[in-house]
Length: 433
Ligand SMILES: *Cc1c(COP(=O)(O)O)cnc(C)c1O
Image 1 (cartoon, rainbow, N blue to C red):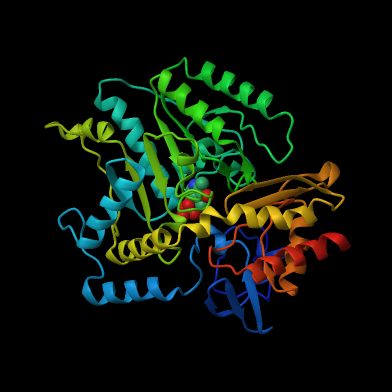
Image 2: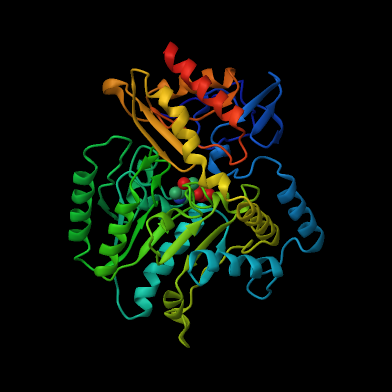
């Protein structure tokens, strides 16, 4: 039986907008924003300034409406806003390619539009590179708790859960290894890592297209952190078994983990890297997949079958490239901002640690997280996170817990006072819980 059509089922929401990741029937409507500056978002009705505690879904790197990046985009828009990249090279793309290649040691850059496409491209390149070498491989390995985006390929790589179960029949199979999440004072960490490496090694006995992971921090899965040593061991096992390692640095890149890229803390060089989010300082949507020259070489041929037939309308959009170059300027000018962030989190977390139902406190670079112990009803749909979010907005802090995982992931420009206030608000709310 067809259910009756509800007219605007929640009057608080705009009647023409279909918001992301939201069931409007039981959600508070979007807050109307007038403007943003540095770490602050300004709303009307109620007129309020909110600290952006999660960098607007992990993208805002140097702060909102950063003048230097805004000017770079403005000047680029007046010079060249867009041109077809299959036939034209422009200076911003050239400069950005040289810079990112120099910083990552991966020679080839493929441009796309967002994090999901940067992952899709990495996976397609990996898959086809084996075929181009005359070998068909099908096994792909990802980790429990992973998130790699919402398009079909990226979605298939991620953990299977309520967010994608409707599409189960359409997703290709992926093998999983455990993710040895750890936290401060975790005594089990080595046992968990050994177990994960053992399972991964076994899986890799079968010829494998690639192993994909989020270096150091699984974001959407719940800010699940691992030690650099683990990433290093994964890289070694992948290499020893002649597969490819894809580092999904869509979240972790550009200083988020306390180094320019997270993989650098593990002292490895992946075969493919996906970046987006902070790439343009969070100003414009852009994704890039970086590949080793050897992989690129496997696509060089007279046979049309070996070409990488992939592209997007806005490939290497000049405005995005200008924003990315400006964002890199800022990172290079002031690396201490991301190098020293971890210390700040740690000093504030000392107080949080004393609260009774806080567990698994963890920090990597600019990202700090902990779990709220909620007994049996664990999981995203438990509403403790929603309650904490609503209360913290009232007090002037915007956060968006992942189920019972509370985390802060602020822009690099957040002031010491703003960070102090953020922790104070969280502390107050948790004390009253
Ligand atoms: C956000 C995210 C993606 C997807 O990026 P979109 O730009 O949202 O498509 C992929 N991988 C990781 C690790 C992410 O955090």
